[in-house]
Image (cartoon, rainbow, N blue to C red; front, side, top):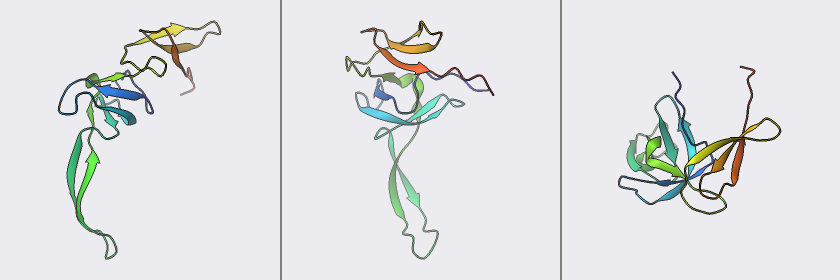
Length: 115
């Protein structure tokens, strides 16, 4: 079952708790089935990689690991503050996400129901 996540790929977020508290980053991937997000430069882990061919080099690789989506908060593009997200219905019938602090429209939610 897919669960809703309050942020989307490409959003700039700030980490609220954990070892990376206060770091800002862009969302690289959203995992709605797990309720997690992959944030650029946050929750870095060391992975040991084995060489797969004669030309590829093995060793230790630093990479991002997913964190719970409840630990991140969207940063508004206009006021540059961490904010909660509100949904608003526009005049043309489309839904949009808005900043709760400055009432700026963040983006329009696609209403594609042709699944």
